[in-house]
Image 1 (cartoon, rainbow, N blue to C red):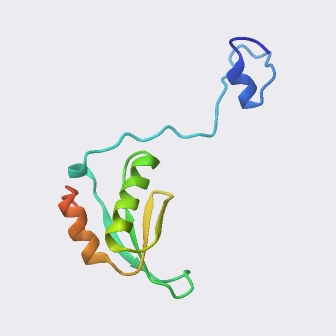
Image 2: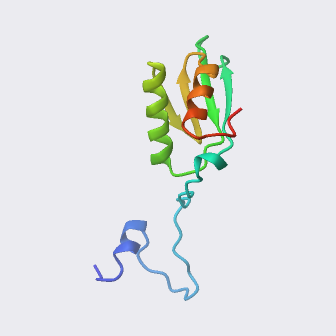
Length: 113
């Protein structure tokens, strides 16, 4: 266990004889959070593949997962329903397109459609 090689241990790489070997991970770097005025959020209703349940999907959010989770939590509380934030989309249970659009505009997301 070397002092400077702890990161290699976490990657599961023991040793490489190739001097040009680059230790890479499958993780993508976190995106920088765009200000609300520059976010181009799109709202749509989906019903297919959800067992007949209606959901409102908000797509186009650019930023770290933690900020998307915070926005999702705010919108779920506002609508009084459940939902999730994953794969770049915020999913709110129920058809709340108009209500969510008004809330997003009030939060400063001026390019919401």
